[in-house]
Image (cartoon, rainbow, N blue to C red; front, side, top):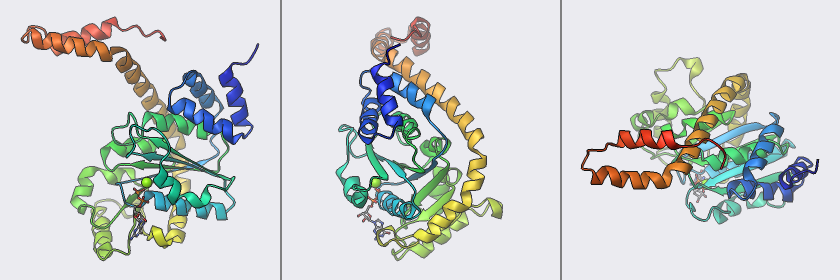
Length: 314
Ligand SMILES: Nc1nc2c(ncn2[C@@H]2O[C@H](COP(=O)(O)OP(=O)(O)O)[C@@H](O)[C@H]2O)c(=O)[nH]1
Ligand SMILES: [Mg+2]
């Protein structure tokens, strides 16, 4: 049987063709014709070879700068590195981000580094649907390490932990206090905490507050806290050591995380499909509820909408 265009594209990607890979990312990110087929192919062809590292934290914490330095460290070890950077500042462009290009610019000519910035469309904090899908394509491309830079701190981010092996949380002195951080739920998501911009006068105080916020946890469960000055490459050795230190434990959790990830994937796929189908009708029905002066309720119309949805592929 003749192969479809997407199968042909997948073959090229699997053969290591960078241009085909870049094209495939665009197909999936922009949901171009055939994207679901390509995503399916990617899912079937992905491997578990790469160590996947998520870097999350508030904007301006130095995530891109850290990513750049981490790339350098892995390149010194001869590793092939893929980077997915989610840029929240360009939700509409959906395209490449100059800032990250510049910050990670030194690697642009390195054939063993592939950096792709994505828009954060459809992403309310945390890891976007687009990022997850593109990550599957990255997992077909035989990287040794895949870095996923995403913006956010708090509960919204918990999801990322199921898609990566190691989650780095980058914080900076001056970002709230430990109580606020505890409220934001970041303790649960970080496998390693980075206090970047440790050249800041409040760095020591902040680091102590952060340590204190882990006080309730058994010592052996407390995540490492690493002080860095990413812009000067300081603390990178310690960070790389810390990553290597947590990898065995995180690899042991791969199966458990994969199961949870699959669950999340099915769930969000269903929600997305329903919302795609229902979006217009919700608007109409909302008006109906309003105009009925509460004779008709949101619950009535939701039940009606769900009953009417056909789950066949459009
Ligand atoms: N003083 C200081 N500035 C830093 C450090 N790391 C990054 N920066 C600067 O902080 C700004 C934001 O960095 P960026 O990596 O884009 O942060 P992101 O938004 O988290 O990706 C840039 O101007 C960096 O040069 C650091 O350790 N110390
Ligand atoms: Mg950035």
